[in-house]
Image (tube, rainbow, N blue to C red; front, top):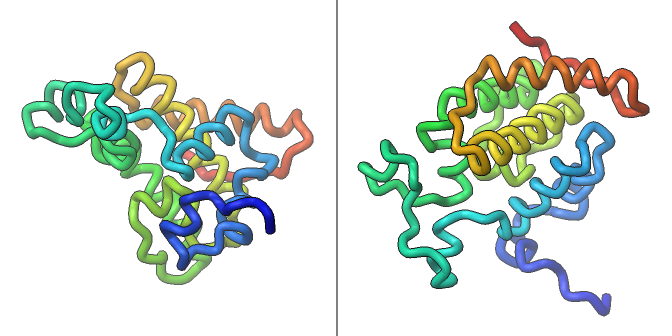
Amino acid sequence: DLLVPPKIESKFPQINFKELVYPRLQSKVLEVKQKDLLFSLIHGIYRNRARLFEQSRADDPHCQNLACKRENLVHTIEHVFCTCYKVRAAWNWVRRKLLNFLADSGRPPDVSNTDILLARYPKSWQEDECLLLLGTYVELVDKEVVLKQKELMVNTLIGVLLSKTVSARSRAVPQAHIPLP
């Protein structure tokens, strides 16, 4: 072993990245953009104001959304993807769906928002569904909320998931079935 393992592995030694997280990044249900975004999230290099502030590249670490700014909410990865007012409803829907997939007909596991975002959740019989849902969500938040400063609506997410499942049928990828309203 001449290569030094990524910092994230020493930061979370209890997680077996080689067996749990890294294979998920190679999943055929994920598009290239989704793989890139998940890689940057997992390795702590996704852009956010808290990280930029630590590097003296931002004036403050707070979310620029006015509702969040009033409450001095720090613009971390978890905030951007889970707790910002612009994503809360969509994230709650995604989290509920993911926990149902992870339950495997039993009790859903106790996993944090960060564990889900960083693909550190337990293995499931519905890995493809979990990854399609997570990858699509992360891509939409990055494109619509971070870049365009829009709110992510649940109906938008559902519409994109529907089109991605239809387009996946025409590609040589595993079929993921996400029950949608």
